[in-house]
Amino acid sequence: HPDDAKLTGDLLAQCFSRELGTYEYEARMRHKDGHWVWVSSRGRVMEWMPDGKPLRMIGTHHDITERKQADLRQQRHSRVLKMLTDKASLASILKTIAGDVEAARPTLLCSILLLDAQGKHLLHGAAPSLPDFYTQAINGIAIGPGVGSCGTAAFTGERVIVQDIETHPYWAPFLELTRRAGLGSCWSQPILSGQGKVLGTFALYHREPCEPTPAELLWIEDEAVLTALAIEKDDEDRQLHASEARYRVMTTNSSDIVWHMGRDYRLDYVSPASVRLLGFEPEEMQGSTIEPFLKPEGRTLMLAQRALARANKDRGIATDSIRCELEHLCKDGSWKWMDTISAPHLDANGKIIGYQGSTRDITARKLAEEKILHMAQHDALTGLANRALFTDRLQRALASARRDQTSLALLFIDLDKFKPVNDQFGHAVGDLLLQAVAQRMQACVRDSDTVARIGGDEFVVLLRDVAGESEALAVAEKIRASLAQPFELEGHRLSIGCCVGVALYPQHGLDDLTLTNNADWAMYQAKERGRNQVALCSQ
Image (cartoon, rainbow, N blue to C red; front, side, top):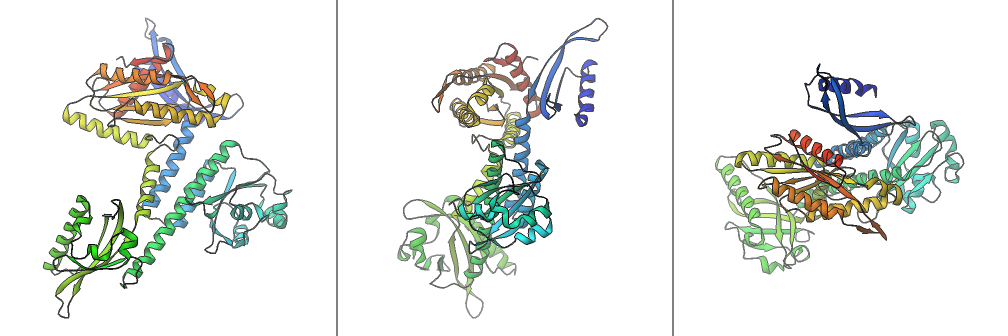
């Protein structure tokens, strides 16, 4: 590819001049049919002529197109997940999702529509490249069977693929509008909540009549799930703000727990909502402090908040209220996340005579936040750590090893004969195989170690605090032997294998990049020996 030519030429020149012992780059190369594929190229000069010129090189080209696409998708999703945690507006998040989709596939036009509160009409969410007259015309359209692709998808809760708008009966009433907008096909995926409720539609338009590939259908589903997460998070936040307004008016009829405690911090009133939220009768909590109902870290946080409030009062700084998010014990022994807002209860002279507040259940919100964090750090297919989380753990492990003068090992693993499985049995079986591989690899390591999928059929393993190369090689051999055993999946008996490259700190690298490159190179040395091999980095 022209954009990559200079980089590759410079690296080869440095390798030929002996400035580099090996070369390694990732670049786009033209396929025979004309499209571009991403290739990872690694090599080194193996023999030199007497005059210092290179005589013989050995190297490999490895197709990493799927990994590159997965990395770009992960980057886009991570950006959206960060916007969610930063509490960006729903409009800006939807615009980012749609813009990222169009950037990834410039021939497609993305549209996100939201179902109104009554569940009867679709409202404009985001459509960066559709004409304004078109988005205005469909804003507020009633859903129903045969109402275009999106109206039908929202009504039925099922995906609707219209290959040719011009001839499809769903679009007959809108042909003048679609002709003016220059639209040829529309693929619409309903956006569903975690409970299966329709929240809106995620649609992709094409200028020409066309049908999506199986990979594109999976991609549309993936983007719709991400969009649903954003919509649900926004709905939760809006409910939170509404709830906070209600909490300012504390009554015994509140759906949340309203309480009062004396200056000794013992509860003297707890509203009946405690039964519904926590399982405790008000009388079971009254007369006690809150400490027995909290985890140790929660008690520490609460006491710190009280100390800060007292210090502020002593300095003449008014403290109207204190807010804490704490895990609260339920009567059945389970724990719920509760959001508590408390304020001092003052007499007519401004003297504190107690404390009053309200507590509500935010467990669902906390679980959603944990889900967002997990999605940002883990591979969606296998549940293993992704590249970003693995890099962070490797850097932390290296810092710990430097401090404690211990050793660690990095294993770079590439599956053998995985592509034929995909080609013969399809991606669904290939995905099941990758999940089974992940489970076997995790069974071969300790809880303190990390297994990550970094793309396609490539995995890495971080072994913390190893005794030396013998222990690292023993784990690598255990993984190799485990993956060499047949897999029974969907009625198929599948036999693959793997090559494992092993590099140790500090022998084979003092930083994460050097260690990773050396483990990767050792893996390719294993492949040169005939596959299903383990190789230790040789320097």
